Image (cartoon, rainbow, N blue to C red; front, side):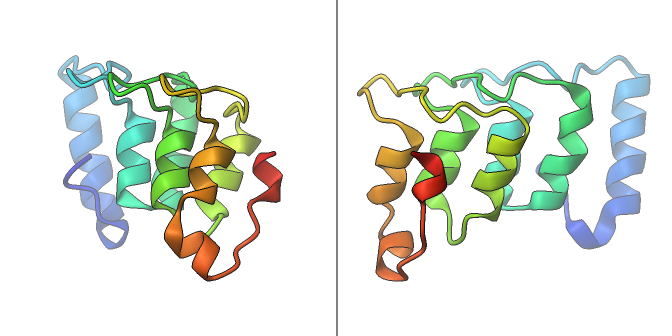
Length: 124
């Protein structure tokens, strides 16, 4: 997924097919517990999130830091599109981190969202 670039979707699809044809399990989490959803959130790309959804990976999986993809998105978001999409495919808004923080709690601490008065009420 590190090679993913929205403008190079054909290359990405070819690499993806090659890896899966060779038996690579794209659903397997990384050593740090990150799923493809965590990686897609880090890329901040809705198209990539939509590409992952048909794989039926658990969108509520926590990584070793105790964060779901929605938690990560809430901390790093510059807009709400990714978070709303994650919620629409089943990301739970009430899952807490190891510090008992919900995605809403983390989004309220996101300086960009608060500074720009971006509504996060949908996370309540």
